[in-house]
Image 1 (spheres, helix red, strand yellow):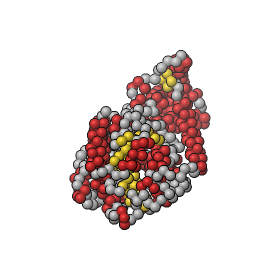
Image 2 (cartoon, helix red, strand yellow; image 1 turned 135 degrees about the vertical axis):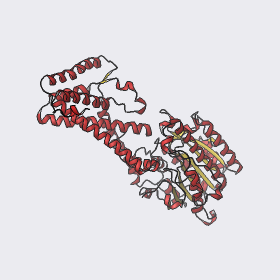
Image 3 (cartoon, rainbow, N blue to C red; image 1 turned 90 degrees about the horizontal axis):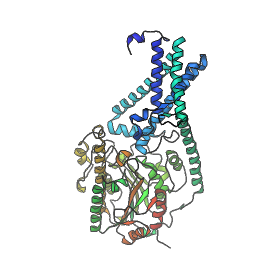
Image 4 (cartoon, rainbow, N blue to C red; image 1 turned 45 degrees about the vertical axis):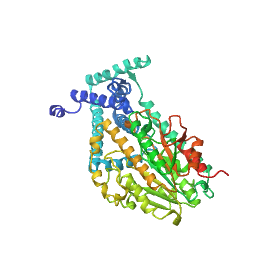
Length: 541
């Protein structure tokens, strides 16, 4: 914008024309912007949103105080739509669902933690400030544009009315005739979002009813008699989804690794069975999967999770405690207060600071999986099984968490020590900003981290698997950038034990033999798997 134009008084023809152009451009962009990243193409903006000329006419006809009120209302509406669509694009890319204002507010803090841990606090803060400044700048220009239009007088005002009325009339006829280049979606979009919020409120009431029924096992006394005296190690592998096994881009890596693990296990006298489990989340929010499996209730939103944390529904961990096990949580990603832990009823919690890692972090990942498992052995299972209670451990492995760089590699277990042996690995490789500039590199790094986690687990179970039952599963599929938009939400689950009869019971239930579930292997919703584990770990009376 030249200084000559800026020096003109408001109400001049140039300002009025500039106001109309800015109002139309910003309004058009906000209303026509698709709400899914895959739909953002040039053709998406080659449509006429009828709301733009309609709002322009309304603003020009209004006068005095109603005009000022209407200008503020239009500004709020247009930018509410813009913010909602930007949020939709983010949640669709990460979680393959639209943004829900009622349920997703907490994701702002989680997003900050992930980004700041990956690219640093300064870079994250700079990016957020840049986005906020850009949005505020657009909002300021949009509001000023409305003001400049409103000051038009005489022939200029008549010209602006014609400029808005002509496309509105032409577009209205086209809309009535079903022309593809004309649409009126603003009100429908806002109503759909209100309906989504309303349905979420109803969903939470339904979940309250599920909790009130308190159906299912309420005490662990007498359970798990088929595995008496054995440690039970439940391991969630971050972002380990069905695509890692079945997607042609990754299948050769993962199936080769799982076959190698089968051979290792057999040499150690261990058997395995595998199945598919439907996860309540995708791309992130791992705790929803943890809560679902351990409670036996479908926890697919933060609101459900928060309500579960305040309930008396016994977790699987508590049932094991009732039956004589010591419940331990090993959580290398927990770096702050964790009040939700009270619900699960752990006897002992080993968060990041408690695991004694002295090496460098792998960007957001606080420590590699091998160190996590080594620390678990040292801190929890160092005493022989006969000299302690059997342990029921819940472990979260995070080396396969985004941003998937750098990729760790296995070292000799005797060399793990305090973790400083991993320093060279942690400071190697490209930064996340470099990897994420190329989707192909993102996918390559993803499967390398999955391969590392599986290799570590195979080595760990072979070395430390005596008198232990392992339940290993993914928490969720990774984001769509890795899987594609139409990937299933299921994850693999493996059960490993030296008790061949126990593993055979899983196979008779529908599990596939070995570490590779087949395409037609049975899939359970994750909330039902809790009951399956309870039944198969308890002898049939």
